[in-house]
Image (cartoon, rainbow, N blue to C red; front, side, top):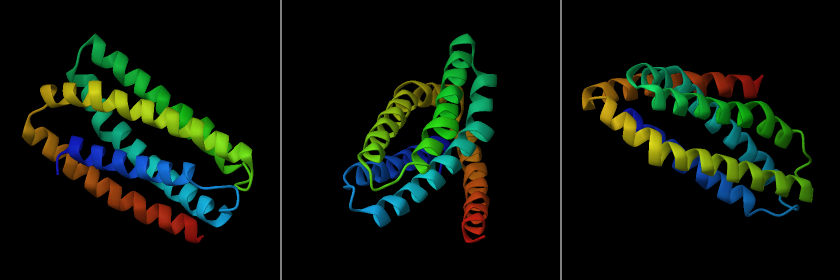
Length: 157
């Protein structure tokens, strides 16, 4: 699978989890906790795939505009990974506060996904050959497999 298709599949998974999470009520504590754990894993792994494989190649192959996109995308990742998800994880899932924070998280991630899919990914398809995108996809699949095992081991510990 090529890198862009793999990342778009990840985006669909994340959007599905976010929709399911925002559709829950304050009574669905167990469901919310499980969905939040899935969201954290998917977002964490996806971020690493982009930041370790696609983004550096994109920044290197592109010009000033691509470098700007690169830095903005990295900042959006940082906001979600360092601020929004930790804050959400620290919030009692049985509260309205949790509902509000999930909604904000969903809006931030959907904005980020929209920008990537409408701006960065089409540009990446122009910058890289099909073979390059397939090679990056292969690297991503290997990294994703390793990260999922690590995430599962950390959850079990």
